[in-house]
Length: 196
Image 1 (cartoon, one colour):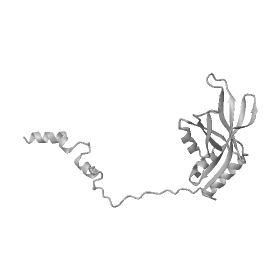
Image 2 (cartoon, rainbow, N blue to C red):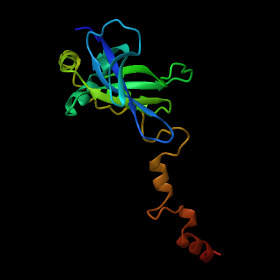
Image 3 (cartoon, rainbow, N blue to C red):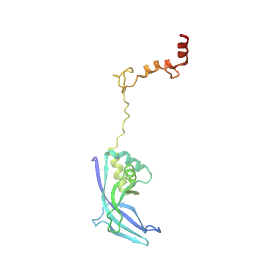
Image 4 (cartoon, rainbow, N blue to C red):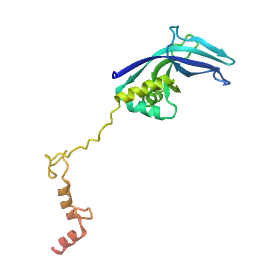
């Protein structure tokens, strides 16, 4: 299996009537599907009382070998999802305030887009066929990362100065168990007075 796999998916976005004093509609992704027909973007596919569904775009979902851990997390979540990233359209002239920007199966990538102020991310149910494809991809590419214990650099000695700091051994000799300089201890000053 290749290290990268591209899967074209159609994206359905719903425009739903809401009762809100500041906006009339809410836009949200409702599904993704295989074998999307070639149509212009934002083709109406269904409508009913208070809603319209659009085939908003056909985008490629790309699976990467290095993201297998993220895909495993997604598959183990109970209901595997495709994350649809919508981006605000500043030059909106057709009454649609959003563009379908990206599809991902990685919850980590989705979260990074959700943290951006101009992206809106919502999860939709992953089709069963896509679940099987991702499971096979993960099975083919996931490798357990072995724990690597870093070895100590034996070339350096504790008495060597690192970055201009005094070695801890020398510092401990100079300071007593109470953490005070030997010259600042009370008995040192008393002994000095007696010597006078």
